[in-house]
Length: 330
Image (cartoon, rainbow, N blue to C red; front, side, top):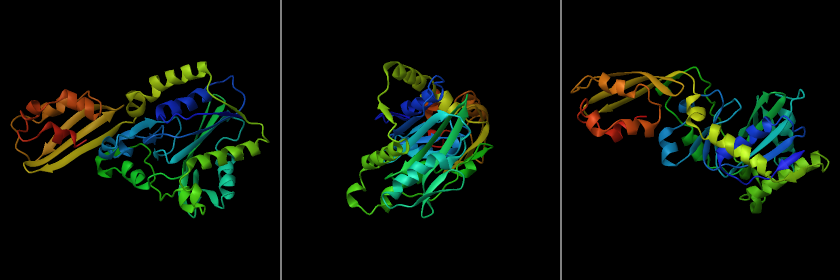
């Protein structure tokens, strides 16, 4: 088994690492990774990104949003969360989540924590989730990865993933919100409660023992880094991958202002506004469709919408509506 040392906390880089080794067909040995991300929401491959995030909270706290290769629900990462990945030949063990989660449970048992696999893909402690897992099989290879909440900010997890359900009507897979816990809350030894590096070393030791010390540890090779950075830029840093892959859905933007109710209905296809209609009980200075038509063809992206509108344009239709007020509706 090969363990690649990686201290990079950029989520786009780390997802590109998985992507690279999953598609590296000439690599026969299993790759094991341990990695962390700065504040990030990672959405599942088949999800509607907009439906999974609390846009206001994400923008205020400068949280990155990235789409991964595997299915399943959206998860929140910060530096209190440790992620692990196995990338191996697909020899029939795919979708046997217990095969890959067993080392985690065995490692925690050494710290007198009883963790178990529950449901399809969750690891829990006393019924509370601390790990979500996902897999993908591709071209004869298999990627299994999971989150491990060690000491993440649970308040941020709840707020970053909170959305208003009535804004969306979509066929995409919505994440199931679960009660979560941190591993550190169940530790009896105070000196390791704030030490995620001790947990990282514990997992690495467990993998070393399971492989009978047949674990090769090395850094990235220069040619590997070059290709990983290319994948990072072309896929994981692109708006098309992270947002444009969202399925067709309807989005309702509604707010009651002192001058009347403003109700904007949008149809979104591949992250682009394909149709827009304005309803409400307001008095407008001109046809509301002027505003709706200006939005058609734009991506659902606050920055882009801001660049294509202005206070003066909005106020030709709605004299009391400012650009900042309009952008805040999204």
